Image (tube, rainbow, N blue to C red):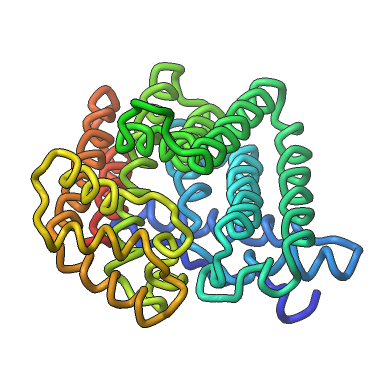
Length: 343
C-alpha cells in the first residue's frame, strides 16, 4: 500500500461524549472502520485504485459510520457485523459524492480537488458505480434484510437527486419540495445508518424504529445547517468554495426563504435586487463573493439556522422512548453538534 493509500486519520466531527468509556470504545471501533474502509476500496487496477482512494484519503466527518456504531451501543456494540454495516453506509455515501460532484460541477470536496476535476466526469461516475458495487457486496454478507434496506435507501438517494434536478412541480411549495429532497438525499442514509447499527447491535425492535426516525430528522437538520455553511464559512472550513450551490443553481433554504418573502409581498427593493443578482451571471468570482456576502448579512440566514435547530430538537425528541444513559445522551449531543457548527 502506498503512502497516499494509508487510512486517513479520523476526522469525524467531535461529538461531546460525557461517558469516557463509551468515547474510548467508539474511537477504537472507528479506527477499525477506517482501516476496513481503506481495504474495501482497494483495487488491483491502478487507476481505479487511485480514484477510489481519493476521497477516502481526504478524510471526512464519518458521520454515518459513527452513528451506526453509536446506535449499535443500544445492544451489543462489540458485534463484528457493526463494522461491516458502518463500512457499507460510508461506501454508499462516498459513491454518492462522486456522482453529486459531477452533477454540481463542484471543484472541491473535503478541501481536495473533486474527482471529476482531476480525472474527468466519466471516470468519476464509473468509480462511483464501483463503490456502490463494493457497498452491495459488503451488505450481502449481512443478510437479506440489510440488502433490502440498502436498496430502498439507494432508491431514495436517486429520487432525491432526481427531484432536486427537476425542481418542484407546478403549484408545489418550493420549500416543502426542498425539505423532501433533503429527506431523500441526506436523511435517508443517516436513518439507515442508525437502523443498521441498532439492528446489528441486537437492540429491541422498538428501539430500532426510534433511532431510524431520529436519523431522518437529524439528516434534515444536518443538510439545512450545510446550507448555512455554504454561505457563512470559508472554503478552508467547509472544504468547498463558498457559494458553490448558488453558482450551480442548486436550491438552498436561505434562497428559498428569500424568494418566499418576495412572493408574499414581504420583501423590499434590496431583496428584489438580491434575487435578481442570484438569477444573473455568477461565473465571476467577484460577483459570487458579493452575493454571498449579501446573503450572509440577510435575516434569511438566521431563519435557516433556526430551522436547522428546530429539526435537531425534533430529532432529540424522537429519543424519548429510549432509556436514559450515555448512549441516549450521545445521540442527543450528536444532533446538537450537527447544527451548532452552523452557529
